[in-house]
Every structure is written in structure tokens, then in C-alpha cells.
Image (cartoon, helix red, strand yellow):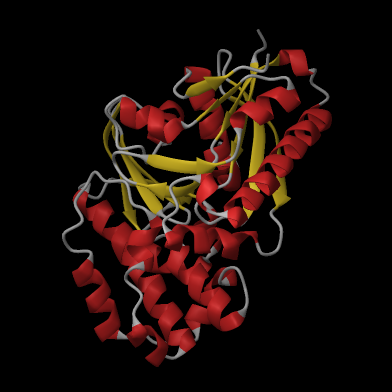
Amino acid sequence: MGNYFIGIMTGTSADSLDGCLVSFEKNFKFVESITAELEGNYKSRYEDAIRAGYKKTSESKDLLLLEKSLNEKTIQLIKELIKKTKIDFSEISSIGFSGQTVFHTNKMSFQIGDPKLIARETNIDVYSDFRNYDIKNGGLGAPLIPVFHKYIYSEKNSNKLVFNIGGIANGTYLQSEKVSLASDVGPGNCLIDYFMKKHFGQPFDNLGKEAMKGEIDTNLLQRLLSKCADMKYPRADDKKVYYNLIDNSFDKVDPNSLLRTLTEFTATKIIEFYKFCKKPNDVIFHGGGTKNLFLMNIIKNEIGKVRTTDSEIPSKYVEAAAFAYLAYLKKGELYLSK
């Protein structure tokens, strides 16, 4: 059996497919990474599938086509990653494949992506269906990466808080060498991205430049916060929960001010979790949201000094590395290559 593991991740932001090759022998080693852009309309079609609430691939012809596209991209990405590293296929123990989550509750989760096909085409065993595996073993199915946060960052007599800002934002509170609390905490990028596409035709707010031009609509912000006031920790959020907050009043707000308000909403939910965890001194961020400098500045103004994972792992690839780690731990369903 090989000493290397591959992690493949496409998150709730659905903006790209990220892969990395890592090793956990003795110490963690980040060997190589690769990213593939998903086809131009993949994200909007994926968002449509979430809003439709599909629970099976067979419920939608377009969902079948999306899965086909994801499978092909994933297989191609894995082969290119291995070629890039010059490591032989036989040295790779297994692949951790996230799949693309379309529907999630605490009792059942549904992802597109075919791990059987990926295992067969790459000739490497694949671990996948991590969310349902976690639910079957007493978890909520999300977030899944706290175990990796613990592996990388836990330290005796040190309290730390690790945030991932993806389509959904989640946090892991580490007290000494244990995960004290892990939970989804708020909308992350999903609402910002949705209205960037709607009003500006762009997939995300680059550096937060559009939000920066607007003003906070205090009435809208208070309504959003009020609607989420009863959401307790720990929890696993489905994106549909946040899409269901959208109503006709959003159309009456200037687009830049709407983005400013939604950015404040995302930051507020992150800050709430930070306060709930008794304001630890070491706060670490990763995920696409870290590239939104305006969002990060709002958070820093409240929390103070924060850092990203980049000194240990490039922020963009933390989740991919986490799925490789879940494969290493065998905390998913196994799909054999033969």
C-alpha cells in the first residue's frame, strides 16, 4: 500500500474543482495541488438543483449531465495531478472524493459524483459519501473537516478557532487537544455570490469591491439576523436555508448596498460564533472567503489579529487535504478500484 493520499473537493461555492496530493507518514506533507475550473454554467445549474430540492440524480436530466461533467473533470484532474508529481499510481493508497452536495439534512445527504466510476477509471480505491457515513456514525454529516483542523492545529494548553468561509461558513473550536465544538455558522459566500451573479454577472465579489461601494440596509440586516436567531450550535446547514431568506424586499435595495448588507450578515454570523467560543486568541481562516478582503477587514475590526492557514497549507486546498485525511482515516464509504 502506498504512502500518499489524494483529496478532491468541490464545495458549496461550486466555483472550481480542487485536488491535492499529501502524505501523513510521520508528519503531514503537502506535496502538490491542482485546480480545474468547472464549465461556465455549472454553478448556476447546480444552484437551480439545490433550490429544486432534488434528492436523487434520476429526478433531473440536467443533474445527470452535471454529474457526468463532474465525473469527467475529476478523473482528468486526478490523472493530471499524478502526472504533475511524477509519483507512480501504485504509491497512492486512496482518494478522498467529496462529491457535490445537492441536498442535506441531519438525517440524509445527497451528492452528485460517482466514486465507483472514479475508482475504476483511475485504478485507485476511493473513499466518498462522507456525509452519510458521518450521519450513520452519530454525526450531523457536516462540517466534516474539524477532525483535520484538530490534526493540524490542536496543541496542548492552547485554545484555537478555525473558520472555513466557503459557500457556507463553519467553525471548529479547539480546546487544547480536543474539538470542543464544530458547527456550520452562517451563509459564508453563498448569498453574496448569488447576487453578484444576478446583478453584476460575476461569480463572486472580487476583494469585496462592489460591497465596498454600498451602505448597510439596517432593516434588511436586522430581518436576516432575526430569522436566524433560533439556529443553535452545533448544526449542519443546507444552502437552501439561506436561499429561503430571499424575498421581494431584496429587489428594492440598491445592488451595492445589498452586497454590503449581505457581507455584514456573513461577518456577523462568524463573529457571533467567535464570541460564543469565548473569544480565543488564535483565530485561523481558510476558504474562498479569505480572498474577500472587505469581508475579512470587517471581521478583523471586531476580532483583532487573525491569520490564514497559508503557512501550513494553501488556504484554497485545506478542504481537499481534509478529504485526503478522511480517506487516510477510512471515515467514508469505500469504493474499490477492482
